[in-house]
Image (cartoon, protein in one colour):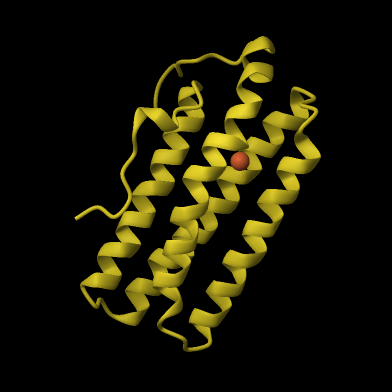
Length: 143
Ligand SMILES: [Fe+2]
């Protein structure tokens, strides 16, 4: 059962970034499945690490594009990403320290945050990216 569902309403109209957001959702659902199935701690820890890593990778991609295309909302957007990463790293540290409950807390936190962030903060860069030549559709899946 999926906890988080993608909808086209969340599209930023740049397929590469949409696919990354979907990938983030897939990992969130993997974590949810691992948690509700009471999977062993190592497995939950692995999925949680994957979620943290992919979140960082995805933010780096967005931030790089913003800098390349001289997006004027860069500083404010980056600040938001930094705050999320700090929070997520705190959850990860607590889990590693033995707190089993933080897996679900992290998931709920990211779920609430993700869609709100896509719809308000991410969609704001679309116009700048399109103007700079970023394609709406990607060429092919390569990762
Ligand atoms: Fe973002």
